[in-house]
Amino acid sequence: MKLIVKYLKLEDVPTPKYQTPGASGIDLHSAEEVILRPGKFKLIRTGIALEIPKGYEGQIRPRSGLAANFGIGVLNSPGTIDSDYRGEIKVILFNFSNKSFRIKKGDRIAQLVFSKVYKVALKTTKRLRPTKRNQGGFGHTG
Image (cartoon, rainbow, N blue to C red):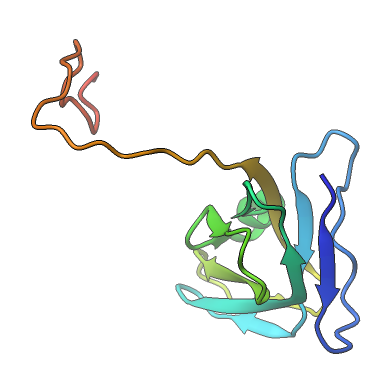
């Protein structure tokens, strides 16, 4: 799959890329300097827009190093980027820690994984076929 990237203004932001040959996601970079206060969230600009092929979506996910080392995560993880969206990619970062966290322009702030999207046709019914589990959920197995 080829992905078309548009840089917005002259952000001087690194090109998103896979960091290793086996990486599932490409890293997204901050296009701005931000101080993320403890317990707060902020929409962080990446300075890019994408042309995702029809039939695919982009999923914004946290970077494990930011989460493990600093308590920084993606608030709506995974965030979905639809194939018909052409605006700037932004990431909602949340500071779960008790210390302020400085994000510098160019820092890697999240990863973007692409996935095939399957469209379904919905059919309404009054009854669903029963299963052994049925409505068991939220820890029903112990």
